[in-house]
Length: 478
Image (cartoon, rainbow, N blue to C red; front, side, top):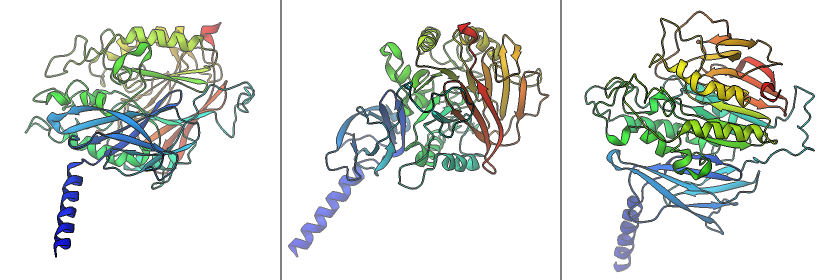
């Protein structure tokens, strides 16, 4: 009898102990080149009885010989959300790893990426062909996802990345770029109560839906206008933990910006990385450039609230592009940000907000793109798909994708979202393809140092509905 009482008491104590340890949710990873990974997750309560760590192992049994990774926590106690981030030690390229993020978590797995520059005897260094059975780099690119009108798109992403249960993904997708308007947690226009209590829950729902994907595939992000605060139109009665891009800045962990700026690339607002023979630069189109939407002349606390500043983005961008341009190992420079510089979707009847944004964006960044030979600029914001030509200062330089004389622009904001598709508009002369009818994602395949394949997949049937091969231009080198 005493033994039975003792066992029951012990089970009660163990149960209470487990209840006190919050559950790890929304587990996701990101690249920290050249050879590390960030591991992040969310809890709905703080750790009070234990210190969170990440266990990392090369075997499924992580209790044996596991590496213990320290964790930093960013607390949004006002909305009961706690964001945890660990950085792995140096990883062995193409090796499978298992990890447990926090003490009350499942076991997850990923395969380490090989980000090293290509060597001259690499089989895909042959630049005389525009076909390759095994691309050097392959990634998905899209913006404007959310949890509504995106069900088919998320299924498509799962198909392309080959995520399947608890097994490691065998995909050849190296990473995913999601350039803004991540969860659309602000876009419920809740007036009463005005604090939008659904915001954190919508982010949770999106993160849990995406966990099978971004717990295995590095997920790289940029901020969009729907990340700023708790309403799509105002800071009205928003909790301070929902303003100023706070949830976005604390949820993800992007690579640190150069010169050791803190906060994950200035709080995840902008960052860059080298990956084999490409350079990726992610910018903030919302803040920290002259006339930016959240710091220009078109804001006030109700209609368009202010955000930032987060640092000297323009100095960072110029230094970063200059270094990439001068790096002999980098053959392709690709920039992504939320808002487009050029699009047929904007005209006198369909203005961006604030309306001057496309113009000040071009004034700030376009000269740098031309000076440092930026090959592609990829954006979202427009809820559709658009392939444009090589453009500079509003002029078409060429319609020949095999001889671009300036940056080529793509809009890939049709992943699916609560607002639906953008309006049908007349196609401008600098737009080759405009599709505001079919949700989908883009896939970019770097075939070698000279050729790149761009494809747009429709979510409704997983088919490629637009593709183009691009030959690298070298206008800034001439």
